[in-house]
Length: 461
Image (cartoon, rainbow, N blue to C red):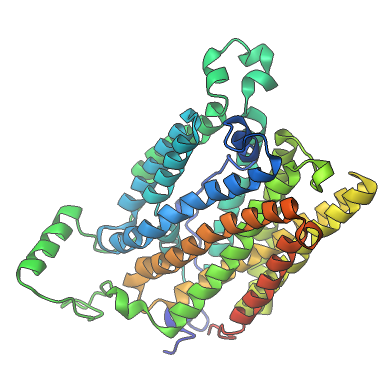
């Protein structure tokens, strides 16, 4: 077994294993459509439209900053006590933080709520580990095509909720105009709906989700073992199995091997491209036309983002697994990365058209092409998840491997939104390269990502 096979080595003449549909996760996100308007409403920008990007980017980065400190520990914990307890903890944290976000009326309150969300949510790495444990080489590409679909479901529903139900007393005065509570907390309703949905998801997970770790320990026994080991001044060995022959999680240093580093590095670069694109997108759409943006309302932004979610879900469902089998995992990943180049390039094209034609039909055509390009970018997620699974030294360390990669990704996602939105605002404010500096920097990052992608093994046997 070499670095290109590991956990994904398929056997000849093996029938494809049915996928465990009931185990695949679903999450949603609602704050992106109204985040720019929220920053204006709480007064943190002091009426300066060019400052909106700074604060939106900072708010988006907070989740990943706090997640970077905890996601590895949550994932390593799941290797010992099981996936289910950690997923339940993450869902609980998500619900509490979303209720808190909707009730926040100050920038500090938003910061604390968003930080709580990231710190308590270690689910992303754990869920990918669970999917890997429920699949094999015959169906892993298909399974990982459904993780973006779950995200896309949130991308469909979330922007609709966030765009349609933000400031409900203003948008629907006949229904909510008499509610003083919704006037005082105009963003509570769009936050409360996904929070309540998460409570329902917690209940369903608690009742029906089956544990995939074969011999999970209780948290109490794990703590007891740790204390006992400390008192005896014993050291953790790197044995890959217990006395009964069962695999056991490896120490962190055993995960720092070439294939894990390469797979994690590519995941980080992909996430950096995707998060910077998503960070700028709503800000660009809400930026006034006279400053080169689309000047769209929160509701219109929500509809566009939801349309993207629908199209992306369909594309991932029908296309990813087929392309992975046809092209191979590396080519599929590389094509997705390359599609970020036209996606970023559409921003300056739209700005140039707006400055000369206003919000013309040509601008809408370029926006449609940009959405299509960003959908192709999502192909790379399923591909890189396959590489990460293959890179894990053993199956018992899948959680730690995913957690390690997710920690690096969280760091990149912390930097990405804040840097991109800040550079966007600075480009507008100081007219750096005619306001286009941010786009040139992002397009240059695509070439760096392509260079990193060239390090991936060509085939997974």
